[in-house]
Amino acid sequence: MKVTIEEIQYIAKLAKLKFQEEEAAVFAKEFDSILAHFENINKEDYTEIEKGQLEKPTSTLRKDEEKYFEEKEALFQNVKGMREGYIELPKIVE
Image 1 (cartoon, rainbow, N blue to C red):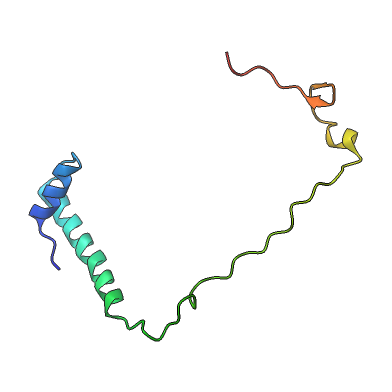
Image 2 (image 1 turned 90 degrees about the vertical axis):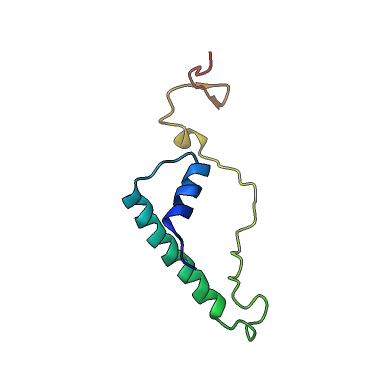
């Protein structure tokens, strides 16, 4: 499928863009290249590939478990402000 400069200008108009003739010609060549890749994909025979064969295995994440951290003071030693066991932050919303 060959993309014409007129088609590029039409698409650009729909997107409220303006291209010079030289730019439209470059885009037309790039679109042709992209469409050629899709044509190559369509030519491939996928009948022997079973469903799910190309799927990657899902990652196994560790179980979300609650852990008690005993060294709380070491964890918060660089915190500027603490109040009643919580980190105190400056007010950011007016």
